[in-house]
Amino acid sequence: RIVNAHPEFRTAFHDGQLGWWEQMNPCYTIFHQEDQTFSALWSEYSHDFPRFYQNYVGDIERFGDKKGLWAKENIPANTFSVSSIPWVDFTSFHLNLANSDHLLPII
Image (cartoon, helix red, strand yellow):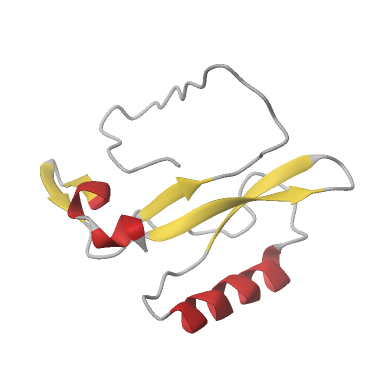
């Protein structure tokens, strides 16, 4: 909800022009306990929380056991990354993004 509330978190380049998305969809990691791997899964955002939660639960049920980097194909361009792995300690973090025009938040 916070990302979608602020245009600064939705900025992107469209055909070389700076702009912003009207709405962003979260792409989050799902952990596979049996082999200690994770996959990325995205869900369509809705400002109506019960609807968004229904989208999330449906995606988890349909794609939650799918292995590989992208559990759900066709990730939209208006997607931001969010991940939480609280059991890992680290002192720094760096993403080597091939596209230096990436302006969207990574949380």
